[in-house]
Image 1 (cartoon, helix red, strand yellow):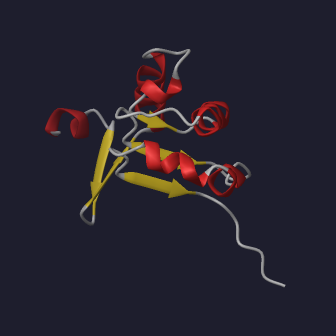
Image 2 (tube, helix red, strand yellow; image 1 turned 135 degrees about the vertical axis):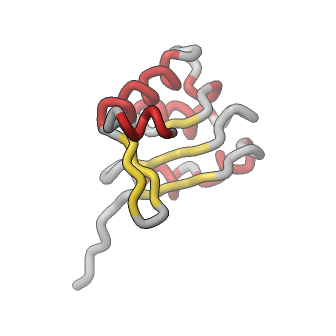
Length: 102
């Protein structure tokens, strides 16, 4: 962590650890490069296409540990919510969406 902080790749502020966007993108690409044709084998899923594939196939997976649903694709959560039963190792679900109040 010290080396990454000195190279300005990781920032520690008020107890939070943040990373440079390029490091985040590199990590995402590395995670996605594993078994590209089978996103249910990825440890983390955040691309809309991969999310739709995982939810629609309803495949049992012990690989998926985290899902970040981007704005606009959160309808997959409701449409295929039963798919979560097949993800026993899922530990993190982030839904990034907008709330509309009328």
